[in-house]
Image 1 (cartoon, rainbow, N blue to C red):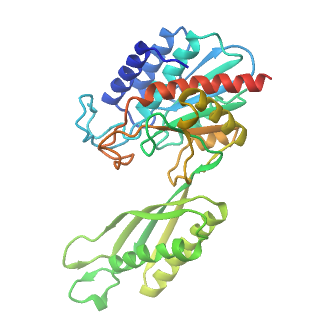
Image 2: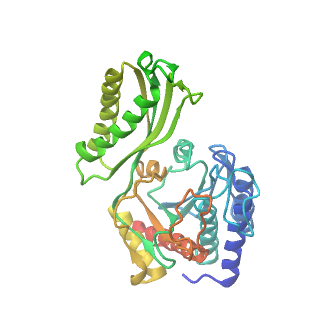
Image 3: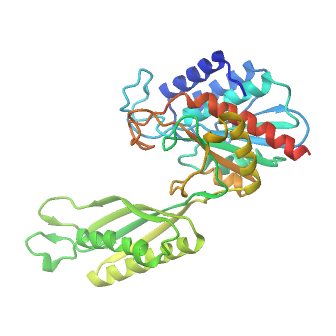
Length: 385
């Protein structure tokens, strides 16, 4: 589907405007207002305030109904990109490409409106709180999937080059559980450790011991990660810490592996506590479920990708990502597919998402917009026949 230069400039303007004023989960009010304004300019009638800050609109009429989704929220990071359109909000930036996702879905709306009407209805879902807050779940509770037969989305990915779209069936993102560990020892003077129970030593042993769950208790065919991202303890250099707090994440790609990791965390914590005469409390919070692309939807996505970037541009994600995506909640209700849009930028090949230096090649914007519009048409055609 051809994307006119004027539309490409508009996509870039939308993305840069959103990048200047990023908003955190459920605070995307200016973002939602911009989306609603642009949808009205296209002749659509958006519904705002869905799940607090979400926006929903429809193109076409009748059945079947296919949904397209973009996430809107930013991250609590201080931007360090040096871009001319850097974040103007201290401590908040778009470090995952959601500004691009919004621009793409607006671009898809423009393409769907300009061309002959789709054979059915396309529901546009602009979702809040993907990074934190399970905005997808909140949108589902508001009824955004009512009548929907299939749903599609895409995510900007700097692992792939511009002009590549990665399409996979099956599992592509992991379970994202988090844990909180409180260690209660016995404080004391640094010169008399025999009179104390050192929470730092207990916590350090626990951090190292948890890695044996991955290396020795989980089938290596199932990618898994345990990361302790926060370790707090102590008050002075010459005082043995009485208390320590550990917080981390468990990423897994198989239900049985996930269960063993949860049980293993609790078991090892009990053992470390007994070993050092400490008390340890463990809380595990279930996170997002895995993203599992429906085979039929993935086949339609692959067909649409070929129409947009050609056979040579359609690639595969080599292995499941241990990142999380709340698009998984939609896929628990209806078949669908999440693809990856190649957006590698020269000089930033090794800069990860969720980094203060994250940026992407804006050449991906018309590709994403064209794919979303094309996959909606392809899916509606198949579902109609």
